[in-house]
Image (tube, rainbow, N blue to C red; front, top):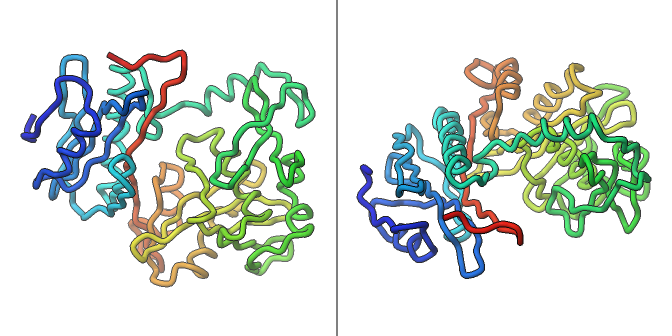
Length: 351
């Protein structure tokens, strides 16, 4: 291994991570670990060392160096604690590091039979599709529907899904089950609720509803439900955190058609999620969302796009925001973060 650091005989632990961060040549560590009863067992670490990124992992025959990649731009570092560091890579580094992170995830799945999302691709969209083809669930009142936690940081948020195929049918609001069709209707959104702001877009049948994330009301719950809806088919969907994220909800024909969320990082706006419901795709809604967002909220003409995929890159390129000469410039951003997996009662720690 080209990096001369102390390596444990087996899996690493918290004390080893503390040793690493004290070394002069290591600027930041990003661990992947397993939570055990008596502490943590580290199976991989990404090391930020001056101008390069190095990824190491524990294979059955000892620690291995996966990659040593020279960075072209300074990453953005955010650290809450030793286990919860986030390093965001920008520009050309973002695309390279995204592939390297997936390679690391594949190595860990190969050796430890355990996935670390988002390093490993869950394939849950394909799994859900297969399950739903064979499932007979029909609505929120079906006997197979059960209450489960929601895919957002909204306190006490809950969803109603089929326990066989995980189809989403509704959310819980003020102790009541609300069908998804009702949640996505403008009538429900505006009943006994006042959104933060309305953004007109010059169309009789369409407008945008703005959310600053606080206080949490119906707009935030609609965005949270859409996050779950999109997350069912894509592993790239992150949790919606109203406390940190602002949002624009697109209303067309009295129905919630899509949304975009963002937050500020080091003084630059970061687009976190862009989603349009299936029924409203290929109508220019995604383009209109981005263009309006840029005009209203992107004052400096430069913004980051978080974890873009091939489809979203195509959209931003079409708008002239990537490798183009448009009014706005979109810079790719890809974060890697510390991730811990918990073992349930049926699992044992890999050896």
